[in-house]
Image (cartoon, rainbow, N blue to C red):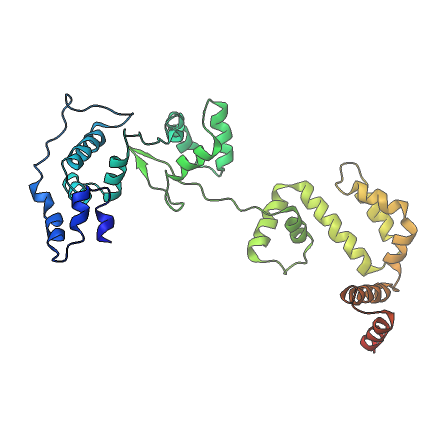
Length: 306
């Protein structure tokens, strides 16, 4: 571990680490007191190597000078106030390479729209809507850059980070429901939904009359199979097949096979038991596929039936 602290030292200093009396280590630890005090870099003595600041450039040059004089990495790092890895990097480089600058925050004109975003963010809107709005007005950044800047303006949705006298709240994330989830919610029986889903459904039906009409038609269609009334299907097809109805195509398909569907509506006899047995047989057969023959399949089916 001690040898690693003094990498790239002169051969004479490296040999001192093998002595038995331990004096070499003490000498290395006390090296820093022999280094003359460093003065701040001046404009005349600072020679820029790469696109870097004068402070880094001064430390880079001074580290190389002290190393040539025989000082170790630990002593140089302590005197310059830098890390040992940094000093090793300085000594291994011929010139100081400039640090990469994250230009994504500099090249956008986000600040030109901050006052407008403060007003718009008070309403119920989303990042995407705000981004589209300012893009039409000349914002030159990407959506990811916009979100990054917006997130830095607030804190946990309460938003109180300020810039001068400006306060820009952080927009809360908007929860969405998939189409399959919406269909499940719309067709669910009353009293079976979670409180959150029920509130969303109430708002949805209130905001969209078309969705409300379609939901009512779907519930009334399911009710046909419970009421078992003759002629009820005909009345439903007339309503669902009206111009502008979202279920117009569905009603047209039912009308093409009216006899079979109407029989299912009014009849108390169902083939549900047959379909259930077929489904059970297929499940057993798939579980046994490639592992048994027909005789074993027959015994398992009959055993489960009994």
